[in-house]
Each structure stands twice: as C-alpha cells, then as structure tokens.
Image (cartoon, rainbow over all chains, first blue to last red; front, side, top):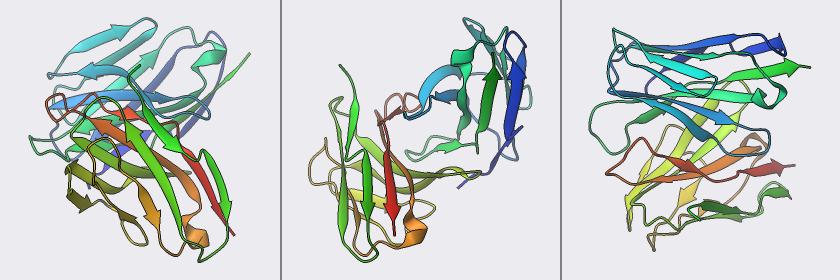
Length: 112
Length: 113
C-alpha cells in the first residue's frame, strides 16, 4: 500500500494549547481525510478535503489540503481533555475501489 | 442507526485454536475491509472485499482468511492463531459511490498466548 508519513507520532500538551499535525506522501491524492480514534473505539471521520488548497473547519478543528496534493495539515485550537485520542490522516488515491490509505497516527494526550 | 458491529470485542485464546471474528454492517455497503492496529504502525489492511464473493489481499494477509457470502457480513478467520497476531482488529465498510465515508467497527482486541 501507499506510504503516508504522519507526524508527530505522539504529543503531550497542556489543556488550552493549540495542536498541529501533518501528513505527507510521495503520491498525489484526490482526497485527504482526517479521522479520530477515541480510546476503546474505532476511528471516526472528522474532516474531508476535496481539492488542493482547500481549508475546512469543524468546530475547533481546521484542516488543509496541501497545494502539491501530497500533504495535509490538521490544527486543533484551544485543546480540551476530550481531544485525547489517536488522529489518523488518510488519502484517497485515484479511482480504484481499494484506494484509501492511512497514516500511522498521532497520539494526542491533553494534560488538564 | 448506521453502524458496523464486531464480535467479540475482547478475546484471549491460545496458539493454534481456530477463531472467527464476525463483522456486520447495516448500510448496504459494497466494500468491506479488515485492519489490524499495532503501536507505531497505524492501520494495516489485512483483506478487503468489493462485493459478495469478491475478496482480495491487503498489505498483511498472512495467517488470515475471510469470506463474503452475504453483503452485510465479512468474518475474519484465524485458522491457527499465533502470538504475533495479538493486535487490535477493526472492520470497516463504505459505499463505493462515496469512497471517503468509511465507517469503522468498535474493534476487537485479540490476545494469543
């Protein structure tokens, strides 16, 4: 499968701080997605991005589809304890059916 | 409620004892997939299926089997589990028309001793 490099691998932050994480690939993707996995649960879709340069927000979350179509960024503002979890990026490549590839995840810990 | 269900949620077993993890979705999705999640390695695809009776290998298929006899069900079979298959397993499904809306099950934590 395609390699998506996600960084950082883990983060420890104080409540109220802003968070940034990113995902890069050597391939060009048609769609970038960001998922969150709460402890003990499966990943849930947070944001979907469909074109290069697109900036989309979902509450305190903002994600951007990189201009080169090879990267994406997720920012969380004013973090709260329930932001704890693993954040995965995913890229959709081409038009084949099995074309969704996941990053390795960023584990976020928020210290109250 | 649209959902993907998996059973069991937790399983401890011994090496070599065949087991099946069930997965079912109620969204009439064509595509279903199994992943395993290990620390630092993210989600790695085991097998996927694009429709009934159509299955194919993902990135880490060794030691696993699947079947897709009905559209809603996609069981994962470990014929002879080994300790290196200790992991967290997720089933997922999506419509091929809306490929980005992939729904995940709650996960099955498997320990093989």
